[in-house]
Image (cartoon, rainbow over the protein chains, first blue to last red):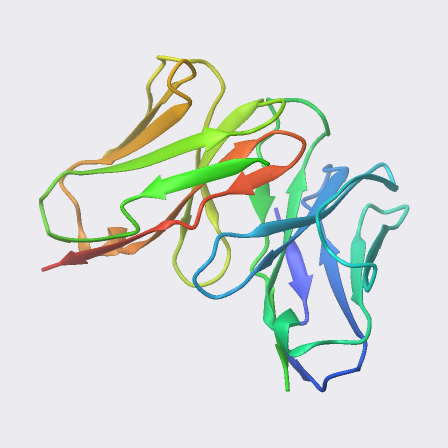
Length: 115
Length: 108
């Protein structure tokens, strides 16, 4: 079975540009979350989606947005890129939402460099 | 504000040593504590702990949660060079709240 898949794996963008990152959860999982990991830090929560609805949002500016599609895949969009947006963006997949018993699995991540 | 603190931040040991990694948390609506191993990219799931005092084991790794002390430890016995990685602790409240991680280097 495929794990959590993310694309692209690496990308370089210029300040002010827009980026779209994509994620496919593990088959059968309905919850997708996005995290930003800056070098030397632990991942920081950005968004969580379950059954195509936003269920949680971290402390990130409105330049960050996301959505979940009927097949449970998800996109993270970042507008007006800043140098500080350079990071590893991780997508996490779990079967459900709101339960302590759901294990959360991560994809390989998308490395974004903003120049 | 939710907070997760890991210690030590870095550790260098020799193969065969036993290590203990620490994690303390203050998280609203705490549900569970998760440990991950991160080598290059994706954090790899190790353990999820929901009940206090019950040790979980997987090979040379084990972990336990203390809800009274709001803490958890991850033990690795008979360390190998392949254990070199960053170990992340995450406390689940409304979302996963991660610590900065412990960077473990196991030397031959």
